[in-house]
Image (cartoon, rainbow, N blue to C red):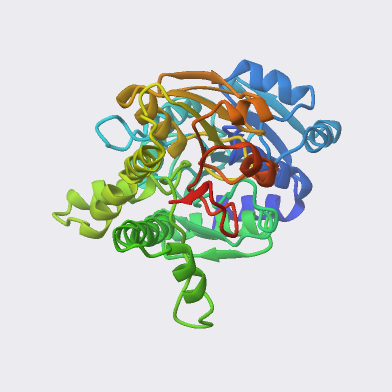
Length: 436
């Protein structure tokens, strides 16, 4: 086993140091569990303000509290840094950086490449395990991490071990976190797989090893492609039901009573977050290099991407029935986050809804979100307004884009002229409420 045996012994004794590159929605929760497991942890982030806040015991994400971060710092086993030079002390390095799409819908792996380039001069020559967690296309771990780090001083399976483990973070989930969500791992070599499996078995409750890094990379893409395709199916059903005068939510709730052979998915104004809108595109893009075209993915992307426009068009009809033109109308969006009870607006359909209402139709748009104080994205610069009787009564329509729990929907119904519920947040029939 050679050097991997030494790393195994260090893992068993909890005597090594773990570095987590990226202290965001994925990296910071990982740092928390690493510390709880008894290891030392270096939290690296290129944002100096974020680093300073972490070292003061302040959190910037909703799933990790200030008290959690303060507890990390107080152990004396955690420190945040913006310097890659500090990786010289790391035995295990986890890369948790963003992997967005370019405007051309091609994968943007520049953050991974930048991290690998910056860490290369500082890696321990006595042995290091590097784990990529950022969602990406199959082959990335081998091509952009293992091959780029290998050198005369760092030899794969001797003092360099590289693996992939897909992040499965679900922001705002009260039941499943990093600790109790099974961790999939796969190395570029069997030795790397053995090491990464041993490491994560000390951090999370259950580890599932697959044949290699490419299989592990494919796991995350399959998970979210499954969700994207099924959401597209139910979104298309909602559009069809609208034509046929059928109340979609009755149909979904009735179908969900079947105890086998059916899993409920729900229509909405679009899909958001870092995973579902992006991951299938990563898979589709890579498949094209093999001469394979994912028709399901392309179709699902088209359907889901058109849901904001379907919402706005249906709103136009609802306002027209009331003798109101959308141009110049005052519209209040309830929710800017991409999902309930979090402050994350990445790829949020609310951004597209806003742009359609304001840019294409000339509406006067405002928003209220108890979790998102301000928005500076997609050319939108706005602050959340208070949800008052006056704000509701002044609006020609109120659109429930995100069904946050901290909203009094009875209050909204009582003081609104028209409520357009895109999330089935409001139960029962009300004369001034219409659904997607």
